[in-house]
Image 1: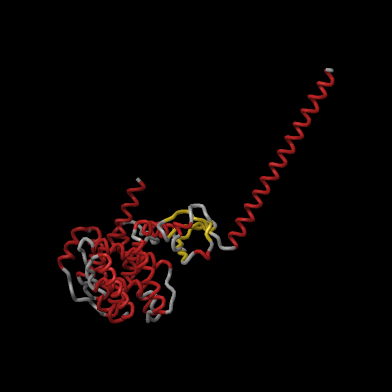
Image 2: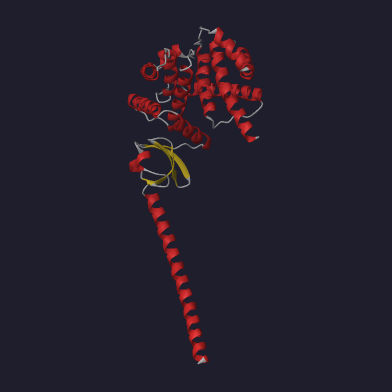
Length: 335
């Protein structure tokens, strides 16, 4: 009887052991199957161009993951069709923005999440018009710089703060198509946002579109412009006592302005009008930038024997201050 019981217990234990082994094998096999399915699903999704939603920025724009990279996409109504974690095929996307800098991606994401959707639609329509007009594709960075510029201009405009553009005359003369497109944009902004931008703002917008339009410059002129720009950047960097963030949007905007500033110096297209009141205000508001501009002025006088107008110095101070402001905020966040 005891042997039977013992045998029964032994058989039961053996059965349990075998059952456990079988369950383990089955579970292991199931895990392997799930892993393989997951792998092949990811493989084929990647091959077919699928991406996953990481963050919804507004009704039409989202951040997606594509492999190990992040991209910003424009897809009409994506917020109503997709949730975080869901897959999105490339066929569902109207435009993919590939930005190779984490800082620029972060800034673009912030802009898209904090500006009105209608404003991005305006920027998108401007660039599509420009691409059609010049028969050239715009870079993804143009969407960022133009959106950033118009957003900043509207904030000033709603406070009644309008500034002149020292490049107005040459933009109208050398880039009439870009300027005319800028005029149309200003008219639309004035109507839809109840502001009163002057034609100077049309020139500022046009400057962003000039990069699509083919510039007529020879390589020697380009090299000379580049060298002078390097000198001025070195002056500013030395004055600020800190390296500039070359990946920041403010640095990009400063370099763009600097390019046309140098070209005007080389071609003797000086801007004679001066807004002394605004110059004095900016000089007092941004003393650090004012000091840097005074050194730039000494460089220009010593190298080219030319004076810089007050309007030109005002714009330089504003760009330099924006770079300084971003640097100071970053320092404060690191403390």
